[in-house]
Length: 318
Ligand SMILES: NC(=O)c1ccc[n+]([C@@H]2O[C@H](COP(=O)([O-])OP(=O)(O)OC[C@H]3O[C@@H](n4cnc5c(N)ncnc54)[C@H](OP(=O)(O)O)[C@@H]3O)[C@@H](O)[C@H]2O)c1
Ligand SMILES: *[C@@H]1O[C@H](CO)[C@@H](O)[C@H](O)[C@H]1NC(C)=O
Ligand SMILES: *[C@@H]1O[C@H](CO)[C@@H](O)[C@H](O)[C@H]1NC(C)=O
Ligand SMILES: *[C@@H]1O[C@H](CO)[C@@H](O)[C@H](O)[C@H]1NC(C)=O
Ligand SMILES: *[C@@H]1O[C@H](CO)[C@@H](O)[C@H](O)[C@H]1NC(C)=O
Ligand SMILES: *[C@@H]1O[C@H](CO)[C@@H](O)[C@H](O)[C@H]1NC(C)=O
Image 1 (cartoon, rainbow, N blue to C red):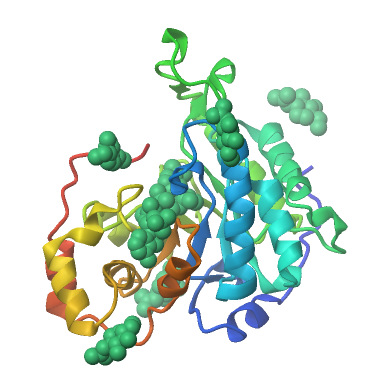
Image 2: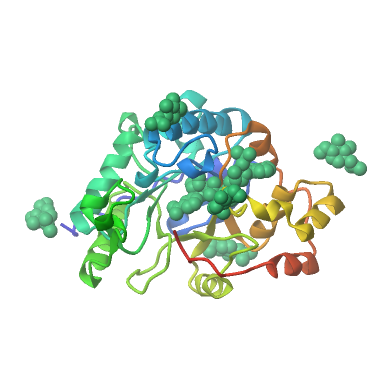
């Protein structure tokens, strides 16, 4: 099966990045990823209760369409776990952008083996509506986490049997999962592959998406990724749901100096370290300013004082 021919990846990234003011990072195989993305996770929508997926879907449809159509965003982040792929795909169609004018990231749920990973990628292409394209592909697929969820606990919260829904299926399944990612890449179904968390089973992910904001940043991991040419991308770049970093006195002081919002300072702090960001918001005015990050520059000492706000007391991933 692995002897299938290596399809050339289409040279379409240049168009995506040259038509936009948002800078891109270079990934392997000539793929370029816009450094500011909009997330579509339920937790990014304050009005949606836990596990109310229909609520997340309605909000994601609105937010993603605004992002692509009126705000000028180009990169959208979704996942099996979010269940917003259909709405992301429909919003992209409704926005009027051509497929190659947008960059779509999705995620398959963990270490699920070869066949399940390939099936997951196909299902995502279908949910995103890309089978209507001449050449269906997803720009970036991530292994969402380096473990598996007990099948009976998928989509279930609570209940004693699902209190610890995660397990490690073993290194063979990890390897098969990654082999499927590489296979999909060779088939041209996917243009880049990566992980949310680095692990020793991965050959060479293009992107490592991790929690990253002033209160939580693993600088050793970043150094490791830099040394291996792996792009780092931040989830919860504004410090998540409560966005508490946005009222931090240090951040406020810097924001006042440049006459920008605290959100802009915090996002700029990531970008200036070459860390891409996936922001969560459904407010168009927030989306707009979350993209206005290129008219000011933080000094080295401002970068340092924001970095020092770190308190790595929480979990590395949720
Ligand atoms: N896979 C994972 O485990 C995982 C976990 C977390 C996140 N993610 C990805 O990362 C995305 C973003 O994460 P997140 O929503 O947790 O964190 P976030 O982007 O750090 O924070 C979102 C919060 O920031 C606020 N915000 C955004 N722009 C703002 C602005 N300009 N001014 C003031 N407040 C602003 C939003 O409120 P408003 O609604 O008021 O704008 C929202 O409450 C998710 O959608 C998802 O794609 C993945
Ligand atoms: C889920 O959210 C929608 C709003 O989008 C609301 O109408 C519905 O009642 C909610 N469902 C539950 C079970 O809370
Ligand atoms: C994966 O699918 C192939 C057929 O494509 C099958 O031969 C193989 O047994 C499957 N593997 C598992 C672990 O189910
Ligand atoms: C930023 O990261 C990308 C992806 O790893 C890399 O190609 C690029 O050289 C880095 N840029 C800088 C300025 O470090
Ligand atoms: C956000 O704030 C509320 C109210 O203060 C708190 O209950 C909740 O735990 C906080 N959430 C996070 C993710 O910190
Ligand atoms: C600060 O920014 C606001 C809007 O972003 C603008 O209206 C105001 O004129 C700016 N003030 C200065 C001193 O540049």
